Length: 137
Image (cartoon, rainbow, N blue to C red; front, side):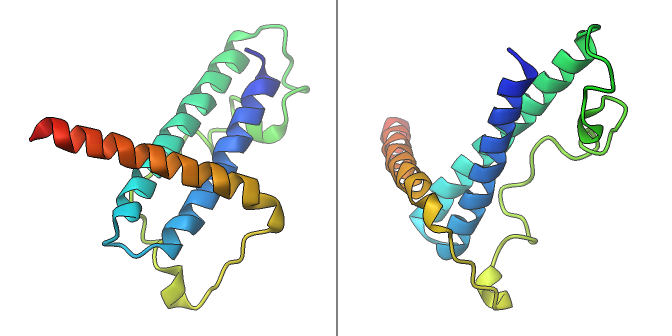
C-alpha cells in the first residue's frame, strides 16, 4: 500500500472521528445511541492508530524515500504524533457536554452524506448489540 492511500485513510478516519464526536454531543449520555456511538468512535480511533502505524512502517522501511519528500509532520524523527496515545478513552472530558459549554456546532451541508452513512452504521451496530445481548442470555 502506498503512503498516499494511507494518507487518504488517515484523513477519512480523522474526519469521521470529528463527526462522530459531534454526533455524540447531540445524544444524551444515558441513551442507547450514545453507547453505539462510543463503540463506533473507539473503533475509528483504533483504525486511525493502525493506519498511522502502518504509514510509519512504510516510511521507515522504504529506503528510496528521502526525508525531503516527506512532509515535516510525517517524518519518522518527528515523534509528536507517535507520542500521542494510540486511541483515546471512550468518553473524553474534552469533547463531552459541549452543549453545557454553550458552543453549538453546526455541521456543514457537505456532511449530509456522511451523516446518512453514520445512521446506517448505527443501525447495523444496534443489530449487532441486540444479537450479542440475545446470545448471552
